Length: 323
Image (cartoon, rainbow, N blue to C red; front, side, top):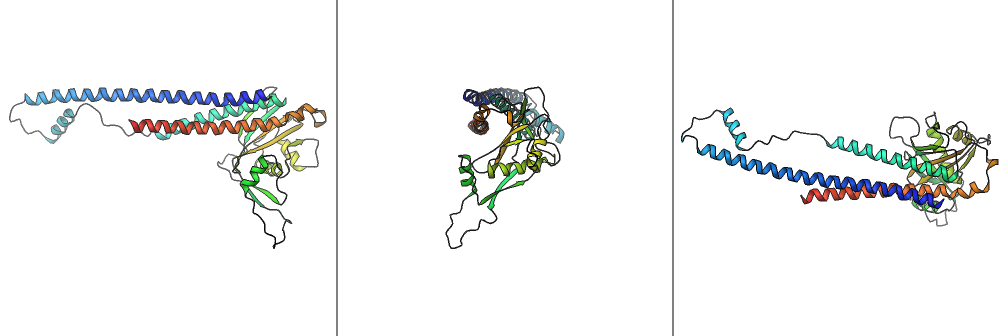
């Protein structure tokens, strides 16, 4: 299992690094070709200017005064045959292409992560959804007022998140508050990657109310580390709402949310099994920590990709400045 996680991290980083290196090499080659083309154009202009001077020397001493149109044409001939550069708006187009390539690369990364996690946990289906539209805040829980004469050390959100990611329990006197702030008008929760053992699987993250369900799931997960959900728990309304987002044949679900140390929500992972919890053995319980390991590997891969892209952008900018 450890080998699968390490292999996933290696291929998710190495493939992107190699792609960025190839892009940098291609960009350097294009820049060199452009420099050669500019030099050839300059030599051609000098040769044409020399011929033009020789032609003017052979003209009569008192030529007829040209009109303004003829004067403009002769000036254009004397300055060479280079055409005026057209106003091209290629920046936004290039940004769209880069954004589309990044989205395709991230989709492949999350699909690979879902496939690796499903094989490690021996699950029937795995889905990774985007939760960066949820903002995390903290507030003092009701009924947790302390003696006002006692000096209280304030706890920051970063400190609480850091302790939580290290395995400590969420403070009992602090409530996580989840606000959903959509970035687009598209309803539902965006799926980043899926994988199923039996071909295409249908998750229902576009159902009405799925945004509120995921928000409640995040808050419950942080407050009590509630990550097991099943259809047998008919008394828990949230459990039934979470199960409604899973494939119809799913009976048991493991759900985990992944955050950064500054408290930003990143993505959530849901692994489902088509059998009830009573049929699970100890091997599945032992395999649960690998969901956290793989999620951490995915976060690390995303961070490394961002750093690599920034480095390559800086290298390209330095090359342009040097020229």
